[in-house]
Length: 67
Image 1 (cartoon, rainbow, N blue to C red):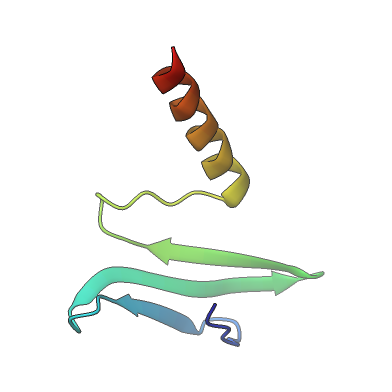
Image 2 (image 1 turned 180 degrees about the horizontal axis):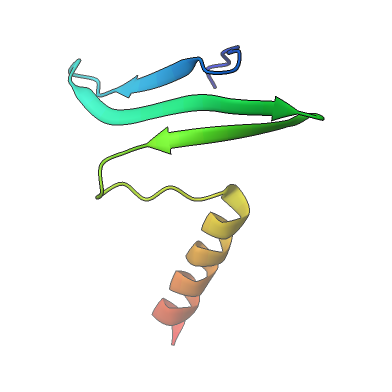
């Protein structure tokens, strides 16, 4: 896992292994009371979820495959 530090309004960009821009940018919008608010820009074909939501999606997909 890559660990980076950023301040408010600073960004992180994600590039593909071939050096091309993936179109994904993560910006620290706000830091307050131990909570970080992130803004994420990504192409429309990229889904972005909180981990707990992604886990539910995977469980639902597995249940559909099993039935």
